[in-house]
Image 1 (cartoon, rainbow, N blue to C red):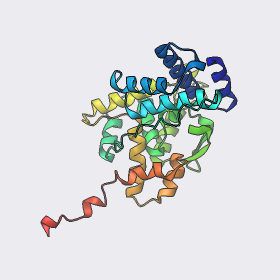
Image 2: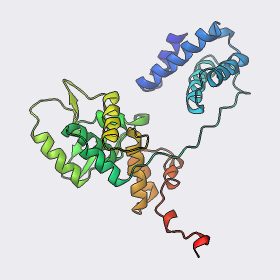
Image 3: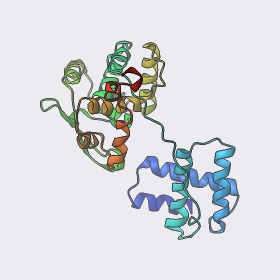
Image 4: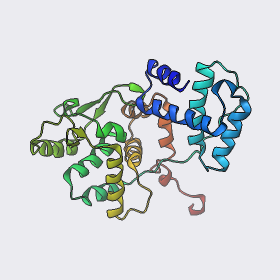
Length: 270
């Protein structure tokens, strides 16, 4: 049955990452309940969800991913009506981490490696997801037009991105000094730098810069969106640049931006 799940996911064009996750969660669920797929019922699903929360201390976001994987298997493929009385747990409404412009500058300056500094510049200045940044190719960049193209981003959608003047200047110098034929902007041997390596670069840069916040790659993308919003950029333009299919996802950043809040005078001061 797991093989049937894999085939159906591939036919529907799911990404490799999603396919691996769905197979993993379904296999782990079966190992837990010790039943055959045709024996699974509503109570098994609820018991497993309770286990993930109570024993594994997993967050609602993680449990919802598991639930999506199980729904695809038992509802979509096997046509079992066992999810009618199962409610998805509410996700935590945490505000995205946003760095100041000074903090980002300190991170870049803290690195001695040109490629690593450029990686941080690129993620911030173009609002890229880490997976998009590490896999971007030189041929996808139009430095003269100050534009780039992300191919098969999240949801397998292509989108245009902006390139800053500073980034273009640094990119031009960096590419001119390279003597390899690797097509990627951030190469490692004949491939590109991995997501895990990029995450380590960002973590180490924040640590060296003495930033106390919990800094990760997505914080650079959140900062890009928030700073554009504070500069007066229309939210629908930001949505397009980020590649969000739903405007509500982009609207999270309106709650993070403190530029307008700081202009409000407390009644205690009036």
